[in-house]
Image (cartoon, rainbow, N blue to C red; front, side, top):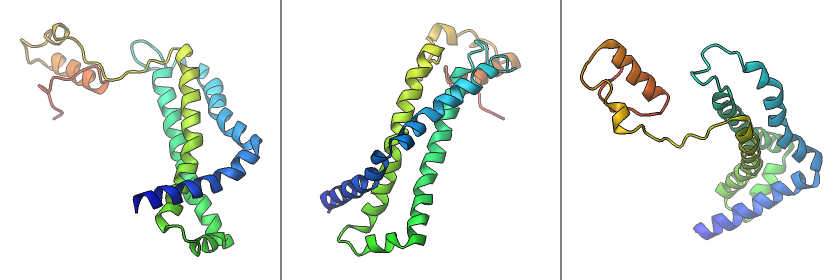
Length: 176
């Protein structure tokens, strides 16, 4: 059963990717469009207040662009499905011996292929610009013992900021 869904999904994926590959302008534009966003809006955000201590806007702008392309890219799956339902081509696909779930899985995978390529390109362009990939490193124990003796409000605020910035959180303080 699983092998038939995988096989059927790959059939739908190749069917959906075939027109995309035949039109290179669409592929090139979809890969370049996020880079245009970075080039146009990135330099304008240099002096944004509250950008953090480092002032590196790329650390929040690039993940925002990645989230945006993921949201809009996956919404295209439903939009393309609605177009096929209105045109009647989806009904023609339903009479094929493909499993029904593979029709949706293959369409979703078709949207994920360009999204993955866009994400890789954005990350590769963002690294020389100063984008730091934070894999969730925690501070050392010596840096976390600065506030261990007191339970003051500035200390609580510091720990909450550390938790929000994902640089570490000891679990001592919670949001009230």
